[in-house]
Length: 196
Image (cartoon, rainbow, N blue to C red; front, top):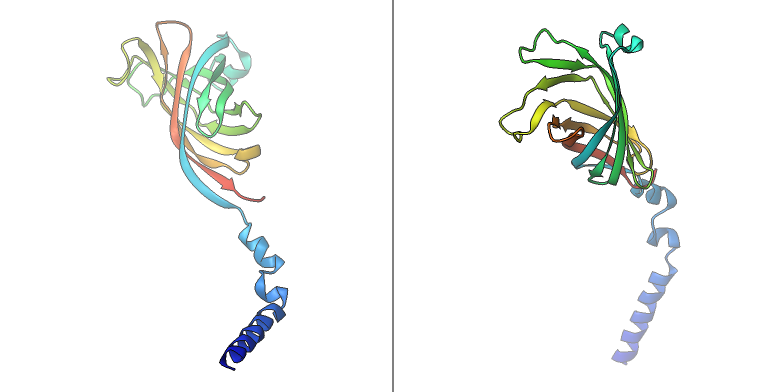
């Protein structure tokens, strides 16, 4: 008899569980949508590229109107974290002087560029420019002839970089070894993850 009562209680309890509505056992659609909202994650970013000048125009009228007489274009390729192989084209005006800098230098105007991954995803960057300083720091190799260090602001992107934000600092230089420029970037990037 005790066994019969125990079996009866188990059957009643199981019936109660099975009798619950699906809405009580699973989250509703609104709860699922809330849990699928995108989140932002901030991670380190690093890029290393080698650039090749494709245009240096010392008497560019458009750049001269901005106070920088030299028009420069450089194509660079390399690798970047979160992107793999990348390419970028820098296009900017240069050649002015900053009265606040004592070291021999050439100023570079504000410009923007697009870092393109092998899969076509793009990362948009802009900078207010800065100065290319003639010479090298103690941290640079002996073959460095000039360098520039200034921030790039991440202003968005496409694909995995849609909505990206952050700041990347350049540590770039030219050498007396060849015509290539060396581009080393370090910083942090905030990426949007999840459904959009």
